[in-house]
Length: 217
Image 1 (cartoon, one colour):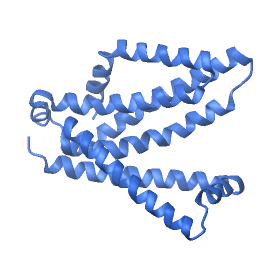
Image 2 (image 1 turned 135 degrees about the vertical axis):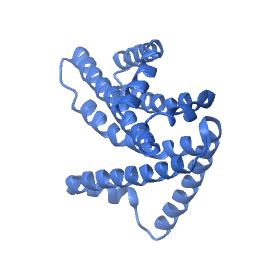
Image 3 (image 1 turned 45 degrees about the vertical axis):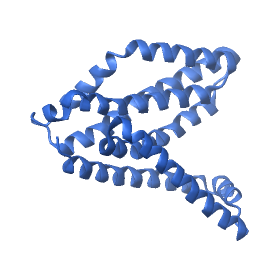
């Protein structure tokens, strides 16, 4: 797995100019507007998408066949994509949080607790994005995965809308219930969010391993 991680980090190193340009734009927006949430969210999403892009590079020019001729198992490959995405995206998220806190200090002379909270909140979001998208990337490839993701997102939206409407008709205010839970029992809410994120990650890893094991290269 160490070799796969080195390979992916070297891929990212070759795109450093793109990252520096994007980071410069995001920092400028944060300094001028004071919107630290935008900076942190933007950089985290860019990190996740960049990590996912390594799958496309691996697939290019029959790259999978070459990779699996090396002493690399399919299970290790799938696990490495999650690990790399979490390390790379998480590092960018933490760096963006540090920049946002520093920018707020330069603007106001005070410590920005909201920026720190946003940064910590974005880490589960990063895991969520990776958990949803990696199986699609491995299953359908770079082109078809976009269509599959859009179709799945649309289906999830429709199902969620139907459920919320049903709850509203039953006079259950989901937003108020969640707000009350966060206010009265924040520890329980955070624990439930972490448990749900971990469960989704483990399920996604299992699906991805199954997909890679069944693929023919």
